[in-house]
Image 1 (tube, rainbow, N blue to C red):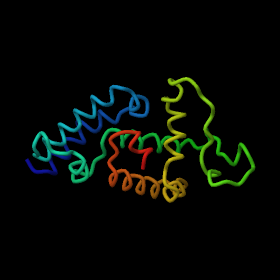
Image 2: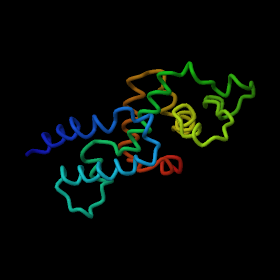
Image 3: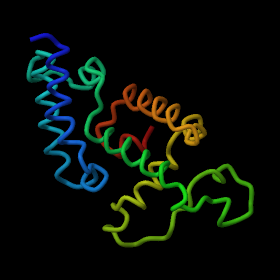
Image 4: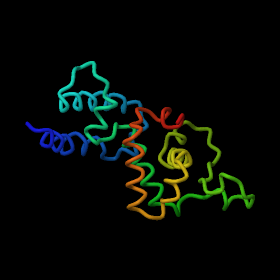
Length: 163
């Protein structure tokens, strides 16, 4: 089969199922198992050896690893529902570099911290300013975000936060 047919099949069967409801389960411990399955499928599609690094294969296939899909879904959720979040400028009137960031509420429960709302705030605040500034223009924001995530191909949230 050609690469286009294999890629279409991947998006039809693997990507559509793995990305369904990802903002709710993407931060769970089970996402690592899904990621292993995703890597196996990418290796098969790209006809690579079992020991090959998938980082470049994801880029060649023009698809996102599961954690990058999670980051993208969370960011799209946050930008779509900005009215549900407070900005730092709304909480205090001091003009700082973080004025355009979302306000991070105090939370001690790990369950709350792994939830969509709290994770969304932290992930959004870590976005580069150039992409964050595009959040008002939906199509430009989505394109810039996808290009950034494809370029970096994050395998974990820790990797995302460390860049």
